[in-house]
Amino acid sequence: MQVLAETKRLEGKRISLVPTMGYFHEGHLNLMRVGRKEADFLVVSIYVNPTQFAPTEDFAAYPRDLERDRRLAEDIGVDVIFYPNDTEIYPEGYQTYVEVQRVTNNLCGISRPHFFRGVATVCTKLFHIVKPHVTIFGKKDFQQYVMIKRMVRDLNMDIEVIGVETTREPDGLAMSSRNVYLSPEERQSALSLSLSLAAAKEMVSNGERSAKRILERVRTIIEGYPLTTIDYAKICDASTIEDVDTVEGECVLALAVWVGKTRLIDNIVFTRT
Image (tube, rainbow, N blue to C red; front, side, top):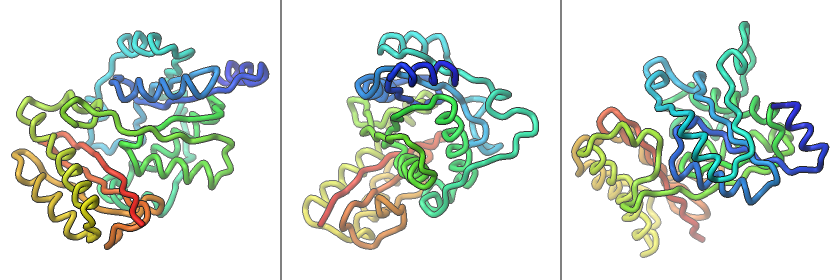
């Protein structure tokens, strides 16, 4: 992969990278479509990264289907799928990790303290291996997107980071590979996330600026559905990921909700002056 990437760079080609864990849905395909437009040579990585999973999480059960992913990527016009194994990414004796501080302290950083170190490390490695000029991330994982932008800036990586809006099902549910875990009843309860975000958006549009009142409404909607347990519902500054009391400037309302045994995330960004 490194030799191929260097060859393309010497040919004057612009390389884009879409990092994924596979089991593609339309959200992934939209990232690839952006990557296709942004560069001459499109690489999609597929790697279920063990260092971002805690022992109690779903690493072993995470859905995988390489042949299906290959067909979907081919239809989009992906040039290369980079599909490394664990020993290639983390060889024996591996001991180097990347940590991004502060923007990872809140939200998922509280309930999944291992997660961002694993993501930052594997993305750094992917950037060194694929040598992209541009990389594409979904904004559904908004904190991850902010962290990657911060890491690229802090480490002087010569990479443009592009964020793509969340792709949703027709009924509003944010697309996720983990949606396959949901039973029919859980699938209905999962709609509470997008419905609560829509209610919050309406409140802000009508002039509400109190984070407390907005979050009270959000929690009431989500808790009104069966099988839901809120991990967090917070309004944060969109750049620092620190809690805010008032919606002003650019803020993100971020959710993580357990629906049955499946943890789902979603968000909406507000811009108020």
